[in-house]
Length: 634
Image (cartoon, rainbow, N blue to C red; front, side, top):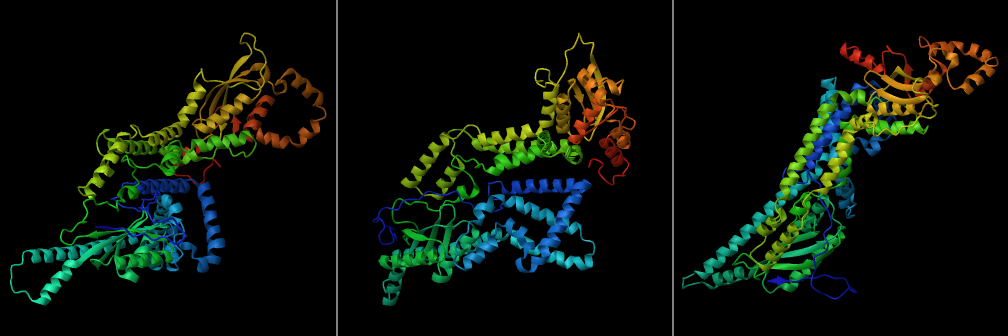
């Protein structure tokens, strides 16, 4: 028998049939092998990324020095004055748990859900990975074990408890739920035994006391109250709601975070619907006072003799498996910003040695915003490029295998359909749910578009260095036009020049240098630029370059202008002669080449003659002989 109980404040709409509200996309964001939301995969992914970042920082002296300066600034200027008052040392652990401890503190004051898990829950793998890597670095950095070991143990224990506090609360809830189910099962079994003994009793002499006991036991029934609760957003909120029901009413309960439903199990006498209704209103008021507005929807009465609902139709209220695991009605994993944008961007940057970052720096340099030149990212990540690409391609392959295997055929029931069929009973409600879900499975998409978009973004960014080289070497895709170039007479004034351009570290640097060369007056084409050797081969007009005589380079107008101003600039040239001699030592550059060198140096590069040993070569030699003390790139 289903007893409808509704609680509405005065002045609201009249009573009507309880409708199931729209389910919000809520999740506990827990790390578990039973969940299919990929949290553990994301955690392993971010741990590898953080370890790679640590390797890059430790292998690059400039980055290491910068991060050490930032670390000491935070430690000395920020943490020490406030550590005893604000306890900032636990900030990373709080972020790893989506501020679960802070939410528990708010629940103690009946504030309700602050929404920390809604914002920080999706990025828990990122912060937890940083926490794990930082703890590993702390243990590797211990020098005085006798003095630092106890402190390290305490720090690791405190960090572990705070970071995994949601999982600990979930284990506690599961333990209490299992204990409550065992109690309910024992009560139902006792009711069945009593009913069976009464029906098969053949004893003629039955005392009045035993008859009253059997009648009272048969008159007892189990009722499940259903509450609709708002404001729950994490495991701490679930713990608070169950704590209110357990402490104030000594009742067992089950909470569905996804649907915002609360099931409360109680024993009552038949014919006491008014008392049950009053108790339901009291429970709803108590939960509302705790910060979670609630109202009673209905109650499901169970027949003790049969162990199931007296009615033929039984609606399954709690089915939070799909929403908790992040799986939609089609049985596929729901996509998120992390899956579609963050992880493809990080994968592409790591697989290309951060080529996109260097292109952005080149763009800023072209607009005279900042002139950095080569950032040196490829010098640290470049040697591991093939290994990183292998891991990323394997990760994409695994995701595609799992996704395609989860699609199945058009007529096969989705995982959510199978679960609903098992959870429900043989009733019209379950049949309708199965048929409706089967109709959804027939209209499921035949191809995972979010995964396709993320894969394309990853591959484009990953192979961006090869794409840049292809664009620059393909004859059909060349659209570069030199700044100023005089007419050619049958190719007689064309010459090929070979130089060494220093401070290039990746393919993006090649693209930036190629752009600078093609924008320089007199350059007709750039045949090749190689960042490994630093060699650049370009085609220029002989009338502009005039490499044989420094005084005859440039256009005729430039030569006339220089001859007219040579006498006035003689004194200035004598004063700056030492600097020019230092800059142009062993170069003997013409004025055109000096202008080209000035343009390159403005963007962080240098022009040299053939035979010059580049900084990348020096770095390779130092690594080969084990003599690396400082990165000559910076």
